[in-house]
Image (cartoon, rainbow, N blue to C red; front, side, top):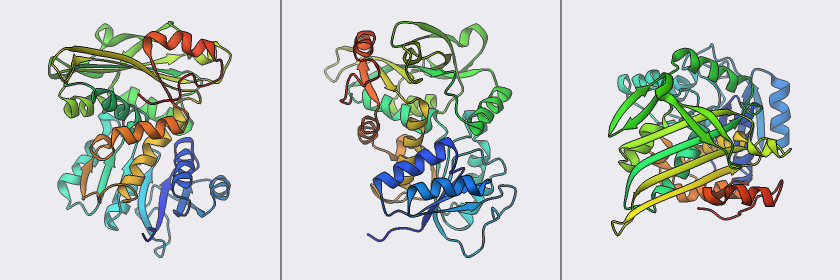
Length: 353
């Protein structure tokens, strides 16, 4: 198969962008990559470390991104906030797939309006989910064990020292300005919750409970619609992760609690943790890389023009395989405390779900 043109990664020298580039290089060694950023020296350092990559400066304030007209790309990845949508328009004007991760539930309207007003020339992947869709895909793989899913509750612990780089901090500040409310699905109804109604206790793997809050995140409607579950919630707690309490590198911990019936109609429930010892960055990079791989047709059939979400394009089982491959761990919630305590600093369970 002939390789496509270079993938343009806006914010490619940041945490999410550079992690994505590293995974794509590992999976597809000959795939050309373009690391785009405002600091050309930083972008060059990332590109040089990848091989088969180039570095460019971009200006998101310009419709042409400040790029020469003779530069050609196969896709545009916005690994940062595309505040003027110039990255999206650049992609659509050239018939290129586009992926974004920073819109969140409260800011997807402009992307949706673009799709409504224009004849979409290429696919747009809205991956502004938690960890760019990786967490939702893991939940869907768990849901595959059920005949009917009634409840999906997800509680994520993000270490306070692992909230991302400047772009990630800016995203969090912007979303907090937009709303303090969260979105849940309750008895089949999508509902905004705020104040005490949005407060959720989030248990860490070692049993410590952190105060969390339901957030306005695309995972809720994505999982509700994909599974039909009438009760869906994702709560988020920022504090000290269990790994850091053990004196290790800050980890990310995501607990999944699903209830419903099995394929024989008997009551069924499961509670598991997804943990990555290096924090949220690897999972976010994985979510983006899976989307890029799919948009380019490097895995699966060609993606048609239109709006898409990660769960509509990416096989959950394959996503979980990739998570384990990059060092993520899945462990039963009842065993989590003893499993992680027995093997400090190492992954206690190497298999998937």
